[in-house]
Length: 593
Image (cartoon, rainbow, N blue to C red):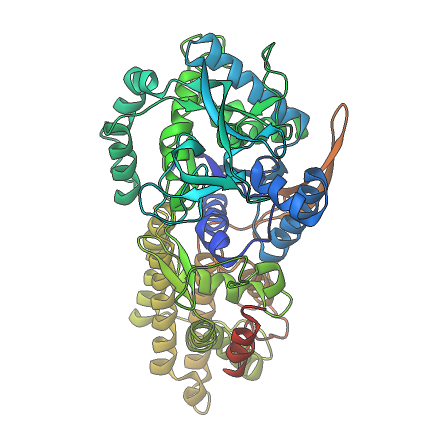
């Protein structure tokens, strides 16, 4: 098959709190599984994201902690990088939005929209705090949702019913979140994105065309209904001093709205990555080649921003970085948004410490069992739930008892009966060939699931194939034939080793750490994927830290590798460890603390 060009875009985490299991299973982990699969396929993959440094979530948290927004986002940016290294989230570039590059690209896209007449100035009443003497960004405003009556709705969105507000003025009884004082409306001028015009000029037609069959129904139906019900202009600037300055004279003291500029990070990160590679034009392969696939991994609360607003921005900025004034950058190929993950039957809550903070969890748990469980309960089509008992049970009953036990049995019997040398198989029987054929067919079935972002189904198919090998071993019974027929023992262990070699690749996108461990225990050299690197990126005025990925030495491929007869295998070690159920009780006791 011809090589594909795949851009994997991952939701940018706000730099105001640590990342919990809902964030990871909503975007970071599914994106990593998808990217690793396509790397094994030999495709050109670029996976980008970064820390969302701007906006009121950061400034609100910074003020609450008595620090600056810059200090706070740098702190969390470092912790995000630590987490992604430990969990194996293989970004080609994880940067942040306070770089000179991102400022420039965001302002360029804004000016392109302005030049193409998709931005217009408008004076509107905004919430003003007489107590502090300034306009308040929407997230500094709290009030009662006019749609559902929730009393703690934010000024831009109600977290209870997910209603988006054009402005905080739509709230009932608005008040300041910082000092609880009453607010009043005053006029201020801002730029608005002309979404109705963009709907007419291509957005609506793009959403309704026939090439969306591969989109999840809940995503495409939401986006289509969102547009069909009628769009209104949406403010892209705000009164605030933390963010990217509006590049228009007379708009000093105003910045680009974070919803507008954060999504531009997918483009700016690709441009930054290209510059870091020493080829400043390399990003164009993913953004301007119409055959390239761009896939956005997000949570369902971000569907309007990625399936409606961002495509509108891309359509409206036609001619940006192109000699063709009518050309636009690539629109999304897919937006496989996940639903929400809850915690022990309740909504995850940072303020109540009700969740699994992944960087903390990785101090007590290995990364692959966490990745496995998060994949097994991934909220692909409906909300799901994290249960610590469920985590322990799946680890013990599936990872350890099925896959881990299979590897352990086969490798240890090879050591016991053949001194660690891969035995000569002789003539393979029909059942031997049937098993290897089933494993080889798995690269089509499992690969199709990975490519469709159906990761739970991919995991179940891997388990099914592992079970087939376990059943084969029970029927071949090499521990029995070893008493009378070493040729039969050698044949069955040889076949099992080849099957395990295939399963190693099939499991690798979900279980990269233990797949690499097994790769070495099968006597193979090199790394399946490559290595993560933390780099310092120098710009004209400042330096920032980024997480990058070097896949140039990767030897993994999407096929079964033969383990040749006669190869000496190193002494094996268990891939996984059985967990006591008391661990679940200990973790439950940590909740809320």
